[in-house]
Length: 396
Ligand code: NAD
Picture 1 (cartoon, rainbow, N blue to C red):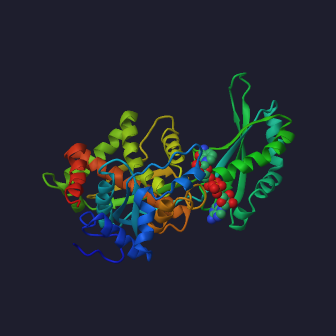
Picture 2: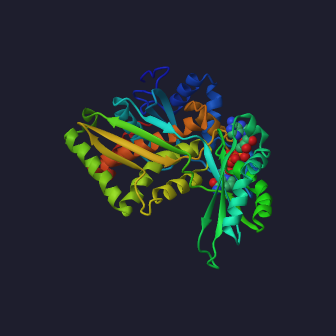
Picture 3: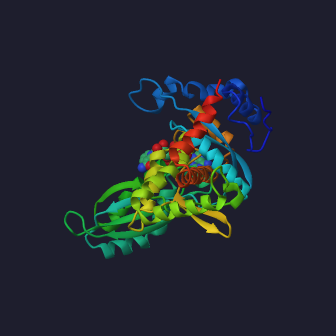
């Protein structure tokens, strides 16, 4: 058995050691008892009674593979990436691509502040006058919303802005207003937080507009809370059996352009990104439907569905760039309730929602790179299934 280093995400031979050995290594690394790690990942991690408290009408729990991908380096920090996913080859592909990116200095990530938007619909007849009255009361409205969540206020978060948009059309053709309450949700995903604030200011908005309000709920198009990832893959790291490195690079760039020009291809391209992103989101007990909704809405924002990650030649090397909304949290929801989620956050050493967003987006880029490399060379079936077969054949 190979000996794994005590730290660093380069774990040579990680896929060769037994599952029990991997658990022992993770426990050692985190300073936890082996039994504690095993309890969080074996049998789904969640007890039926906890599941019964989490949602309604529960019979039991439903298990999925919980894996850890090595090789990631993100903003100079070595990161082990927990992934929960049912699809073979995704974890191996992520690890493989992360190693290539590592050769070029790792993933470089920038995250926006954690700003989420709550929409409150207002059926104002005189939209101009109502807009003026609402904007004049902005400070009061922000204070009213802030009062709802003293915990968030203590942490330096809370409402930061309020905007009014006019929406034309609708059933009567006379349109309505939508108030956007912008909230800094700190390390939470923030849906419950902003929904509560939206409901708190709705009666005040009704008074100001002299009109009823309609829906009061967050927008999953979290385009103020984007994550951007850049990566460089040195030419020599693209070398593979039967192909020149330059051929691989140019094939990946050509595949990227295909996705940029054709929404049919872009949908599959983005699915490949979400293979990695969703696996991290799921591992940490976050709401992957929210991330999916945000990703696709953002991809279509310009009027045509486009890829969230693109690749270009940069000198001799390959350069990737990804941008997508990422509404995730390390508190709230199931993140602290599910033992597997708590373990996943510890494994990746996420100290903030931004840390988690960086890891999820980097995993997305890694899976995109791996998929494009396979597609541009030997084909996805052969390329990815080989990675999967390699780890299966060594399993004991
Ligand atoms: P939450 O309400 O469970 O937790 C957020 C609260 O935790 C904050 O309001 C704050 O009071 C407190 N908190 C403590 N420490 C904090 C910190 N460091 N940073 C920020 N807040 C801190 O959860 P949430 O994040 O508001 O909502 C997430 C849940 O909402 C998810 O389960 C999601 O599935 C669900 N949801 C989603 C949607 C949607 O996406 N459309 C709609 C409704 C609900």
